[in-house]
Image (cartoon, rainbow, N blue to C red; front, side, top):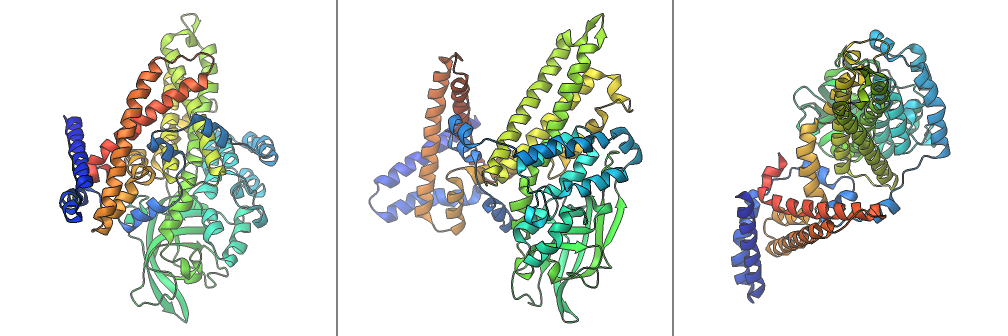
Length: 567
């Protein structure tokens, strides 16, 4: 079997290491190590510059504990406690409550737009500037407040929730805050916070999707009328808020054939393109085209195209200025990955919570054969799934938001959050549709599920389809990024001649696998003898520890797949 072949291979490698350790002469050691080293170079995936930037971006948090095989529930509970400040709670109880009362989901779907009063209220109360610091006019809210606001609004209107969430997660505000020049921050952040400017971010293209590494949008550095800039050609689609945007964030690939750059470098670059003249584009950008509006399954949020053909863009429009050219990929990985773990999971939780409240109540009052359908086992099965999903998503949201509050930015956990929270949200909505039947498939003012039923596939698709998020990021990038020894091993292979370092890291991985195999077996035996008793936490921690050891050992065995792990 495959497992036996892997184990046999591991034994052979371990025996080889033992022989190397017993061989006194270095040249003999090289004889034993070199074939394994050359084999590893063949099977290990090649890492591109963009992949390397992704691996080096952000931080590692709880994911490293999982790959270690020995997480601590006590440490998790003590270290990560999400809280709302008094100001954040007040905003949730007052301004957000008022906004929710203003929303009529059925009418929004018919009009295919929010009402002018809702747009005005969102702007005046800084809903688009929740994450912008206070000294730039924003609310300065944390991740947990951001998530709870989006979640609450999504329970009333998906279109409004998306309108609020994009400027706070996928918009250029976060990029400006971290990388913008002082002049860019002083001009744009107050305007974004007060809703004077509405942002969108152009990343997705017709051929590359949201994979920035494969995009064909290009800019060429040039000098025109004494102004250093770029001739940029791009074609972006599926861009949320594009039809109403006044400033467009744009990711493109920059080249400098005439060597005009004195700072920065070639590569993926991020710029801000205003739709009207301002101090960064004094002559405007007449080639900027906001195209036709898309129709995302009838959902009413704004979505469309952004295009241009060889448009001159001054270098002052690059976020961070000339010195930040070529650093766009790192900027995207650092900042936008965080939003993936906040806003989209909030939509999943809103869907699941609404299913619990609405469908749970419906099942109590709806009768069939003179009994509430909630008493029927088939319905109870689906209600149990909905309840379990809601609890799981809520717990994950609290945990992840607390990790962010701890000043960590884990891109792998962010991807896991997006993947599982949106999938569970979709499952809850689908199970709910089975329960409410005709009331769910007939659109009207009383249908509280139709909007979310349409919207969840959108949440699953954006920011990388879940099927690819699972394979490429959750486990592929997760293994490389979070494993305690793998990245160091890959570095020795990349160098091409580091036999000593390779031997050391290979031995560390073998030791890691052996330790976790022992943990897996011993903990399996231990949990069989453990009952819940009065210490429920200890009971579940024992099972978590067992599963973590199983996972860590299987991850080490999975390394035998080499480059196959990338897909």
